Length: 172
Image 1 (cartoon, rainbow, N blue to C red):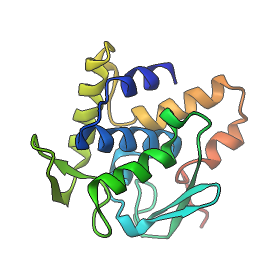
Image 2 (cartoon, rainbow, N blue to C red; image 1 turned 180 degrees about the vertical axis):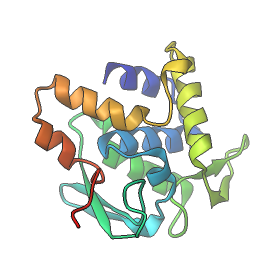
Image 3 (cartoon, rainbow, N blue to C red; image 1 turned 90 degrees about the horizontal axis):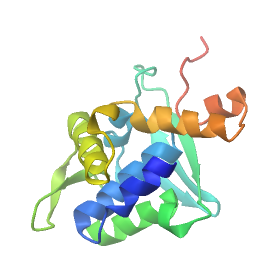
Image 4 (tube, one colour; image 1 turned 45 degrees about the vertical axis):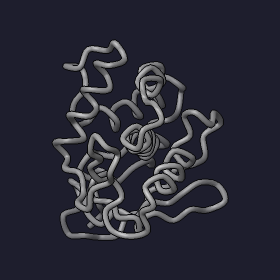
């Protein structure tokens, strides 16, 4: 969590920073893989009184396209709240449909196509490096594994940790 806060501290007020903030916080809080993040559409997000629900169409362990939902609660700190970060990204970008996470150019223009998983990995490394963290320490599973590590350090049960994010195995 400390490393996440350090990384977020380097994000400014540009559209790309708002996107990156939402990407990091939603990915971490939802214990999502980068492929799951980039697979989200605006229509896959449902805001509720306690936070938001993400509808995942596919994941590494769900190649059949069985509907999965992941809940993400409001955070106690507004600066690290994934729900507020996503609300801000949607307001800033003006997105109402299509891919949720998109490219943002140097001029702050929002692209039409979805980010790739590779770009998410590159952004994680860049943000980590910018905040003084070793960029080689961040890769594909950084957000998902970071959530699990932080939850375990907070003495959450293994069952509770496994309930967050997409299932690792689906019952047959």
